[in-house]
Image (cartoon, rainbow, N blue to C red; front, side, top):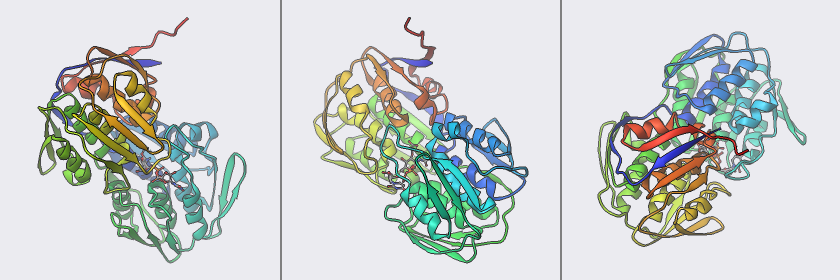
Length: 422
Ligand code: EPZ
């Protein structure tokens, strides 16, 4: 086990390159199962979730190498449709292997992914979408088995614009008979990246980025070379890190159009932001201003994956703010840890009432999930004194060596081994 030790109170400064998007790479790696042969996927970051996905693909019979942010994946000898339980438990996102495996084998068996630290994480929209395409689904206490003779295109309406369900249905429908239309589809940039990858393999999909995606089934797909988009949540995390430390940073190779809502909110808080093609300049010399209310919602609204990080900034604002989480039903586990650092935050169901304080104070805190952990790192960088963040394996799921990213920006942060308490 490891921990991060952070000496806070120093403004971040410098330039950093944004690594590839975890939430774009994961479905794209799963989609490689739709075509036999050798795929080359570039700009894939070294993250725990990516390694688990590659382990699952190897368990299914793929050969997979990952070096220098490039994945070479040979899917020619895939010979199983059964996702190993241990690996499924490590990463619930393996749920979107269902679509590709159903399309390739006509059957798939997974284990109930269960909830996680941020909420119940239901999968009813995934299952209902696959059933609409003709799959027969047998759900038991711990496994889910799906089978289908031939997937047939259908009109599907999602009750919620679920990212994963949209991706699963796209991948299942890509070689189905006829046309599938997904209404109320998720509009995240990662969905557009998946559409572009599938079309590069020979699919016929349009509409990603809007709430209606149309998939005309094709007979066959072929492997291809593809480059994943940069990670907008990592970029947003760094922008907020610059703000909480009153620093001045430059982000490279990040298209600001993916961060419109985040830029809008940060400007309301008083952060100076300038953009130029795929460069974003961030500068925050003054104490942040409070905002009456920020509400997380599906893209293009303010992203739930930056809610915890934004809470750190608002906890240092000169006044009272409200942060409302409407996407997940349990994504406030960072509130207690921030209050232990001197924040003044009260939670009532899905709203956090934040009274800004002049300063946070370092102490030992525990990451409970990926983005809460990233938020605690930001709090440590801003706080007076030393902060120790434990359970950092959660952070490694979504940030490629987070300590090195912040060291590049002048942050005093080290990764150390956690000596077990005897
Ligand atoms: C994706 O998760 C992302 N993960 C999440 O990022 C992100 O927070 C989320 O989309 C929202 O943007 C990946 O892409 C790997 P959803 P996903 O299906 O697909 C409910 C991170 O930190 N729902 O859009 O699981 C669900 O309970 C992670 O990088 C149903 O009710 O998100 C949740 O409340 C965290 N039934 C809401 O929809 C379903 O069948 C949004 O979930 C599916 C979802």
